[in-house]
Length: 117
Image (cartoon, rainbow, N blue to C red; front, side, top):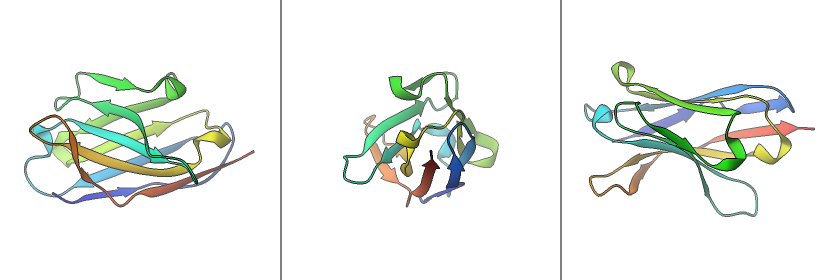
């Protein structure tokens, strides 16, 4: 599967962005998906995940109440709505697909989000 992330950009603190991740192939709806991010000089960290049906979502504490993950299986697309952005949210954001074993195994190329203060 190929994953293509988009929607990043420069935004002021307090603003919003919506990231999208489009997947190729016919198996998108069978697997859980997630968003990760990597800030400059830091390790990649988990941001949010969603089950194959979209019925279950979870996120890291630092984005709870601000970021919303969702998916549209008919469009093979994963979303991350980011509101109330903070400078510390600045990072390259990656989408990823889980494999049969539950691990994240397929990764997109990343999209840069920069939040200015």
